[in-house]
Image (cartoon, rainbow, N blue to C red):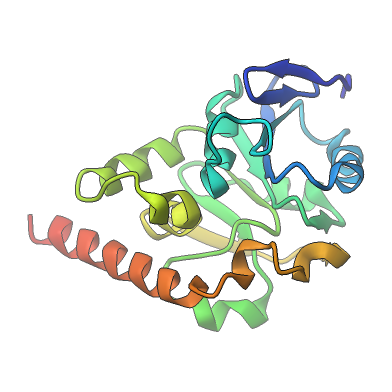
Length: 208
């Protein structure tokens, strides 16, 4: 990967593009750790797009991941959180299946996500058009509100076909800091509400 750091709007494009783009969203406060992520991805993806919420005119929260992905010129997207080092990103990429989201999600997490909602932050690969298809379905019934910006990963997976893989990864020390989204006081209430919305959309589509 030909590393560079060229600002394109709020997107930092750190490589050239070909077949796979890695899309990363960040708070902008852990640049040294991000450099380690770039290094780990460098020989396995053709481009890295970073949406930095600290530099954006509006903080798009988690949805910055999908804004970064939308800026890609490749047919396939890889993503992960900015507080995780995936030991073998190439193993996640090798699980790619057209039309499906392949999530690196260890077995111990899966009982909590048996309804199709899944985690993408430990490494994930999917077709570039899949987020738009899922979000279009959601936005037919609900607005792009604050809940959408935070819980868009759940919407994406809950309204798509998901498969799992299991590849070792390591959390950064700061992954448990109070600034992380999963530590918010309303985290579980938001998760419950977004699941309710997803189930409602699925029910409406099934009976439409």
